Image 1 (cartoon, rainbow over the protein chains, first blue to last red):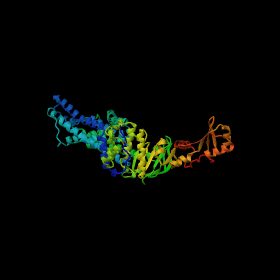
Image 2: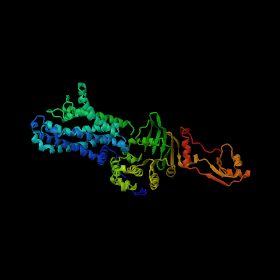
Image 3: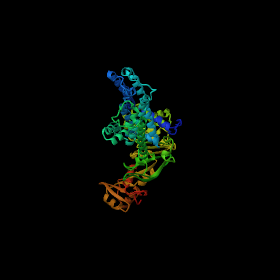
Length: 281
Length: 310
């Protein structure tokens, strides 16, 4: 049984309390992120999707002799094909880092420590996105290393001095970072775990694919400018069409596409920031 | 020091806090008392900037809470025991809070120790009982060694030993010259802990005075009289400002006269008295009396001077 110690306040060293700077808020967000088991599960699952898909796709293509040597066999595209699933896990992490605070009441402790509020959102997004970037770089490295043994059999290769290969491989952490930031923003807007996850996954899986599948050009053009469709341009090879989305009507260049995605991220975080400032916690 | 001026909070049409002004001074324990829905928690949330006031201002140690660069060093807050992510251990929760203000882990271990959480510090907060959660909340409030403490129902769910500990701690903190504001629905607890009372009813301050004064002001002198001549005594004592109610066949409750007055009157009329007992009023009675009148006394109306002719 636990007991309270006597309330002896005399003779204690003076407690050192420093201002709640942005750097300290980021450090605190790291403590919060790392101290939840679910964080590590999600990071592990999301990261492992990358080598898992890379290995299974390259290995299975190696079984199809007639595919070998085809110009559409872009190594970087196959190595990064797990992004479609990894993003779902990392986006869930992004939503939960924000909404779990509202669900548990933790947000009140958080905002009492940082009453100007906006730095908290910044620190949280920075920490979550940074972690996802690190995890996805590990994932890409594992995917490349894991699938390299089938490169010869499939006629594929990855050469970082080729601009496109570099862009696609770097595109994985960049795209996943943007997707996670978008998820954090949506989570901060809706403040509810189930609603936040439903909104993000609904957008990525249903809305974007659904709209892109409707054969009406203005709608398809709009769908191509939605965050995931635009952002995944970064992961597509000029030699092959889209790997992730069904829409191939986009006129956006890879970096234009990514810029459009970042625009969505800024909108989501902007709305989140305004609501965080205005609404009661 | 907490100073509120015309503090108002409306949720749509509903007014939770209606233009209240009060000052919580350092060096004493101030109790926030009121029935459910009186606006105690909403006021506390506005003090620390969680809720935005619809009108009015509130400052802590001279400035709005959000303007403090190191707020945890100024104010320690316990709002509800559930303000912790259930998946995090008690210590990790405190370390995260401490990290925002560069507070050393030695201080974290110290507050864990004094709140009796040492044996469960590495257990996840989701497994905590209400009392454990309350201890964690108190540990969290003490983290920055703040000048001002704001505690919403701190003894809620604590075992008797914990209740005594909180009482002793708050009194010690106030004695050091700190500002302590606590709310409680346990009036007996308030009577033992608080020096000053702010009574809220329907979002308004209905009393703001030293505890003793509130009890005394609301006190009506009721004397229980036992006599064989109930009817004769009733007729004798019934005059303006005095209330006589019969309790039992041979017992009366007399309000508005002292025991001495009753004895003198009975003696001069030749009525025998078998018992004459002043009935002590508690804070609880005073409180019920105050809050029952919350509808009537909408603003800073003076307290009713009880009794009448004495």
